[in-house]
Length: 161
Image (cartoon, rainbow, N blue to C red; front, side, top):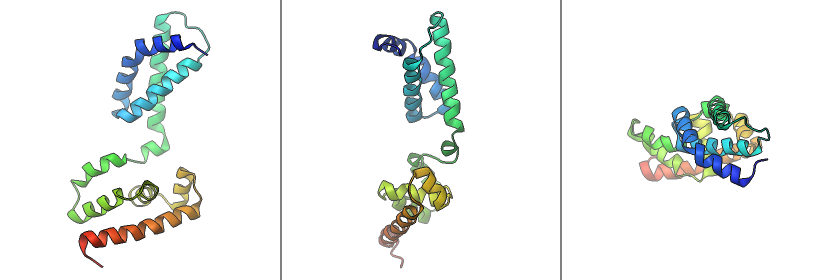
């Protein structure tokens, strides 16, 4: 394991490079930060000595590119869109659908995640239970409660019974 001094030196030298590579591949600040942390954690845990500074830089770049590719291949990453992008997508929707989306986004996260995965990403309750690591019956309960909350919210917004 590398010392704190070595880690700080590497971060100082290579942080801009790692961030640029991540942004180039991922086009997303939060994923970039995740990969940034992963790369430097791997650096700290890497026990083999580098031949020279160029070898070290090449290793950092290779680890960064591989981590970005792994994230992009990740099943969950390829089958979803970030919840933050939904309001932008809502502008292209008909008015009724916007009301529904706003109601869904206003749900507490334990309901929002389940509703989003079920209705927008079209996962089954069993698949959602595996993704969220919750019991299938819990997923059904969360869906039922979310529907009840949405029914009330949408009734207020649309005045439809």
